[in-house]
Image (tube, rainbow, N blue to C red):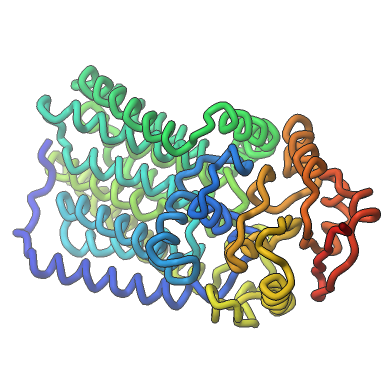
Length: 505
């Protein structure tokens, strides 16, 4: 089935449109990215990138609960641009631009230019705009989107290319897996499902196996400590699995973010062409399942977790235009026109919604009503980035105190949501602890991991401890520092809600 005959290509228009959209995206990310700094969620991946750039190894030198690829990307951009705003912005623009370009290229192969423009704009406004900073969800989704686009570019498949079309997604699946484990598994199941429907399944799976092996080699290079890696992600996954699974199994969950609307519009037109288009329809249904699953696999607000809208709508339109030339009755043609108009309307509405979420920047389940910062950070690496005043002022004062009073030869343990202090004060992060905020009965995971962290800290008490007064009452005792704080440490200075303690020699 060859699909609808498309207008002649206009290379200069295509290139001009894409460049204009990429420039617009860069300007918006530059405007949007620095309006709010969420310390709870932004500090730990930046600290992880800083630690790796400084020579630390994930899972061996610090505990981490998911794959390391996103941290290595942060480290790469820190190496290229230095630790600070420029690296964060470069990371955002680079990954987002690749996604925009990929969706544009594959859409332009199958769709009229105006629909290509719509789905590409939607990809722009829905992928990184709502969240405003590099995040491992997007990185894991990025690899899968690249694999989907690669598959679609080579569709319909030819026997001579089936091995390669299977291999590339194999590498991407592993990279997604070692970025965010659950999303990586989801992408893997998608391609297994799609390949099973193909007449070239043998070559596709052979290529896929080779791709998985190649990705496995990358995994061994990046993980460095496979046993520790597996233990750490397993302990954490077992703790959170029940809550996330229960949310996913709620029938109402499958209506989230309106993915079901375009899916229904496509299926009522294409179900009778299942035999001819089973690969694309399987891909579309599998993308729907992954979209819903990814919504409930984290703490992002459900309404703002719209990061797959672009590629999903692109595949919806591609299926519709694939079947258009095979419609035989007037009723089928009327239904196609009505459904396509519905998809166009949905795309326009989705663009409006995603722009709204991007401007609001309200992404996290625990965000305050207005997350836009009212204080500009003064620390040089992130100067001008806006955040909550009571936290930002404390951060600047603590950085100044550390740079003035804490020798770099002395160890510093951060037991609060300011792990970014390591990079801002240009010192090695305290080793053997979780990357992220300590949370009583949650991080480190109770049991083996918490015992390991307690043993590490108690065996080599840090020279300095930065904490807040809530953590002093809850997390400090949870990691076994309760008695030591009372007997071995003096308050050096208070900074509003935060304080720094010095070990008595």
